[in-house]
Length: 413
Image (cartoon, rainbow, N blue to C red; front, side):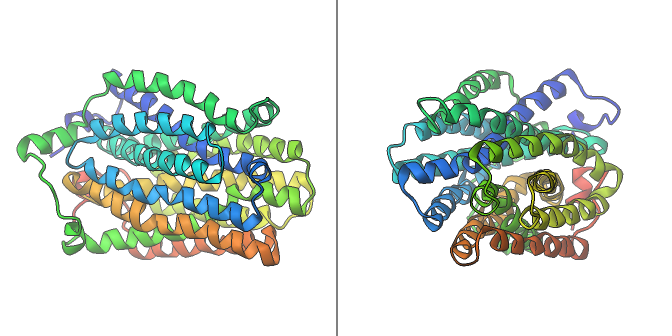
């Protein structure tokens, strides 16, 4: 079975173009939120009188919301992609606004925890949509560009935060301003259709409640666990690398707050064209060849980002790190969507990324924050550079090449 929506490899329909823009805008906020916590963390810690380890614990608690997003992503195989995406956009809008109203670390953690539940579910379902609705020959490009919109979100946030921190509302304004376009996105989703592949499967066999552990008892168990391991190893590094860089720059390289913010903005701008090219790279060189380049650059970038001595070289290394943190995602998003059948795709994504893979997403920053109390931010974060290399080793060992092949073919065992 080849979906009509994806059978033409030469051009995109008018609806596919609109969907492309919509999913890109939705993913924009994953980057905005990702950089926001990194940019405001020193200010937030100061205003709430939190230590380094307490700040890292706060980040870990917030990141735990990404694991709970599993519940929503899994439901996309039952409720449909459209309904879950609509729910997540509305939920993230409300939670992001509530973050700006927080009165202390507990209320901020609750609001941001909830925001991450909806945001990461929104991101995951967007990637499933992208895989199911676009031609096989352009799937990597589409997933890469949509993911790169996250980098654009990072650039916009990084550029705005220094100005917003200077306002009377301080760090709160970052969340208030970010809510405005989310309201517009919630309105625009009215023209969103259900994924054609999901609609075909649902018409043939209406979705029923699936036992929680069913996918782990079936033939796709191995693939779920392999991808979960790769996601987890990757997140241990990438989630800490950008989050704590401003802390490192201010404490150990003695940047001013303005210098740290400016370096993040410059690095994000420099990384953006490369991030947009990552999807095309994995279509041309394949998931394995393109992935090898991306994962090696990520490892090198993270190590240099936390070891180089001066601002210019650190900013250049940070650009590589931001590129890597964004570019590894199209590789793993493509694999996670391509290696499972339509009726299991949401459940598989939820298990391998949102539930099991996100353990590294949560524990990585916690471990780095704890280690920073003893050895400093630089050595603690630089040590995580080994994890993308481990992840790449498992990709080359365990995963097949899927570039340019239809989902019905790549999902076969």
